[in-house]
Amino acid sequence: MLALIVISFLVAALAVLGIMRRARRHARRYGKDMPQRFHAGHVPRLGGAGIFIGMGAAWLAAGVIDVVNVYWPLKISALTLLCLAPAVLSGVVEDVTQRVAVRWRLGLTIGSAVLLCYVLDLSLERTGLPIVDGWLRAIPYAGMLFAALAIGGLPHAFNIIDGYNGLAGTVAVIVCLAISHVSLQLGDRQLAAMVLCLLGATGGFLVWNYPRGKIFAGDGGAYVWGMVIALACVTLVRRHGTVSPWFPMLLLIYPVWETFFSIYRKVARGQSPGMADALHFHQLIFRRIVRVAVHDDEARQLLSRNNRTSPYLWVLSGLSVVPAVLFWNRTYWLMLFTVLFIATYVSAYLMIVRFKVPRWLRDIAG
Image (cartoon, rainbow, N blue to C red):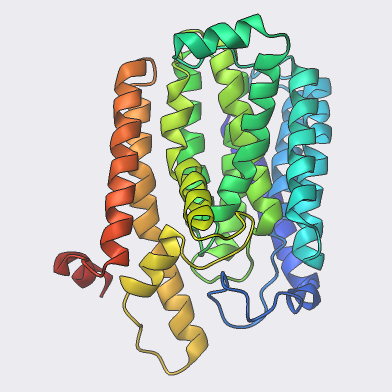
C-alpha cells in the first residue's frame, strides 16, 4: 500500500502548493477580530481542497490499477468521492466566503452522510449497550440514521480542534494509523487503504502547514478528515463483529468530547452553541501554558507559540489512541478508558482555568 500513500502524498503536496500560490486574495476575508484567530498576516485556508484532491487521486488509482491487492472497485471509490463532495465543498466555500451558515454546513454534512450510508449500505446496530442495541434493531432505519449522524457530526468535531499548525492534521494521521492497524489485523486491506490514502494526503498538506503555517486546512480540511475517518470507523464496526463499537469512541474521544464540552460550556453561559469563542482546551493551553516567545516581531512570536501548542494536544490524543489500539475488541476496557479520558480532560481544563498549572508543565512550555 506504500504506492497509494506516495501517490496521495505527492498529489496533495503539489495541489496545496498550487493553491497557496493562487489563493492569497481570499485570505483577506478572514477578519483579524475573530476570536479563534491566532496568527499574523493573511494565510489561505484552502488546504482541505488539496487533501481531498490527493486522497481522491489515490482512491481512484487503487480502483484503476489494483497493484496493491486492495480489491477496491473503481465504481465504489468514485461513488464515495461523489457522496463526500457536497460536505467538502460546503467547507471550501465557507473558507473562501465566510458566509455559509453553520446550519447549512451541518445539513450538507448530514446529507452527505445519508448518501454514504445508502450507497454503501451502512448502519450502526451495535453500541455495546443492550437496551440501545435493541431499539436500533427494532426501529426501521434507526441504525442507518445513527450511522449518518455519526458520520455527519464528526467533521464539525474536527473543525473545533483545528486551531493551530499541525494540530488536527497530526491527530488525523494518528487516528488513521490506528484504524489501519486494526483493519490489517482483520485482513481488511480495502479499509486500511482508504485511511492510508487520507494519511498520505494529510502528510502532503502538513509539509506546508507545520511548522511554517503557510496554509491552513480550513473547514474543508476538517470535513475531509471527519467524514472519511467516521466512514472508516462505521465500516469497520459494520464489517467485523469482533471490533467493539467503543473502539472508535475511545479512538476519537478527544474531538468528540471537546465538542460536547464546548456545547455544554456555551449553553451554561447562555450562549448559542454555534458561536465561536476562544475558550477551547487548545486555546487555553496557548494562552496560559505556552510562554511568550522572545522574537523581534509579532508574526514570529505568534508562529512560535502556535507551533509549540500542538504537541500538548498530540499527547492528549495519544492518551486515548494507545488504549484504543491495545483493547480494540474489549468493550468494558474501552468504556473504562473513555471515562478516564473524560475525567482527565475536565480536571485539566479546570486546573488551567483556575490558574493551578503545575510548575513542571510551565517549565516544559518554556
